[in-house]
Amino acid sequence: MQAPGVGPWTSDAIDPKRMWLEEWRQAPVQKVIDDARFAYYKKWIDTLTPTASVLIALASAVISLFAVTLAGVALYLQLAGKLH
Image (cartoon, rainbow, N blue to C red):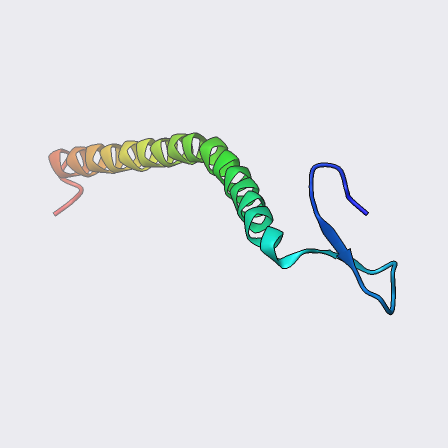
């Protein structure tokens, strides 16, 4: 029995419904599976990396704005004589 696109298959003499790929074909099929997994995760990484970069840049901008605001308030209080 041959599945389309993959094969040859072997069946068990005791249980003919149980089938598996012959050993000499397992390595190429495992490589195809590994390549497909890599492509799947690479797609997600390629999608999430720019999004994460933008979020990190926005967080950095907010922190910088907070620091500048805090420095401005400290300078005002120092010039007004309320901060010793």
